[in-house]
Every structure is written in C-alpha cells, then in structure tokens.
Image (tube, rainbow, N blue to C red):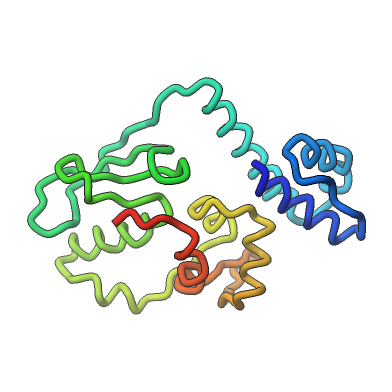
Length: 193
C-alpha cells in the first residue's frame, strides 16, 4: 500500500509542484483524497482507480481471508513429470498467484512467470522445444507489468523511461517489450524455479 500510494502521490506532487505528504499510508491516502478532483481529470485516472481497487481488495482479503481459488491448468511441462499444474490465486511470493505441479513442489511458477510457462505449454503441445517461440517478441501493457510484478503504475512509466524499454503503440495503447521489462524487473522478484 505504501509503495503504491507513494508512487501516485509522487506523480501528482511532481506535476503540480506541491510538496508531497509524509510517507505513511494514512497521510498519503488523505493527501490523495484531497486531490481527487484533480485525479479525475488526469490521463492515468483509470490506472489510479484500478490500483486503488486492487489495494482495497487485497486489504479485504487480509481482514477476511476466504482461501485461494484453485484451477487445474493441465499437464506439467517438466520432462518426465506426470503431474498436473494447478493455479492458485495469491499463493505465491509476495501474494501473487502461483502455478504449481501437484506431483513435484519444485515445479512452480509465480504469476509474473506465467507468460513464459504459457510459451512452454504451447511449444510442448506443438511438439517443439520452444526455442522458436523465444525469437518472437512479446509485449506487455503497463497494467500487465504492474499486476505481474507488483509495481505501481506510476513506477512502471518511470522504469520504462529510465531503462528505455522498447515500446509499441496499438490503437492508442502502449505496449512494452517483454525482454526489456524482464531485464529490469528480474532482480526485484524471487525466482520460483
């Protein structure tokens, strides 16, 4: 919560020339609430709203946990493994979702690793090694980056600029190159496998 609220407060303070509040959840939330009319006209209001919604949902989950959902995804992609892959919401590192093999607990992928796992499943189903798929460029929206890596939206835009992520625009939306995103954020996340 602190990182997300601080990121949005920093963005608003920088754009308005104001000093931001003290770095505490309560003070940041009050400061942002007082500037809500300004945020309503901001181009990133949709991202701001979505992130606050996710924070509120996560807080409700802490207060009233109802267990994580389980969904069977399919056969494990690891060689000589007959297990089934099972997705669980909020079961992985940092509260992200996780896909785990029911036969070997070492076969697991955090939510931010799912695109790579998806390519392995597709390559297995095509009967290829997946090397060919590695040459295809994959793209993430800023929302994908925020959700998969747990990075506040304001920080996604800052990281994209600082690290010069390749960007593609389609129908007015920005997409960032997966390889650039992974290179920047890999060190920030625990490795499942």
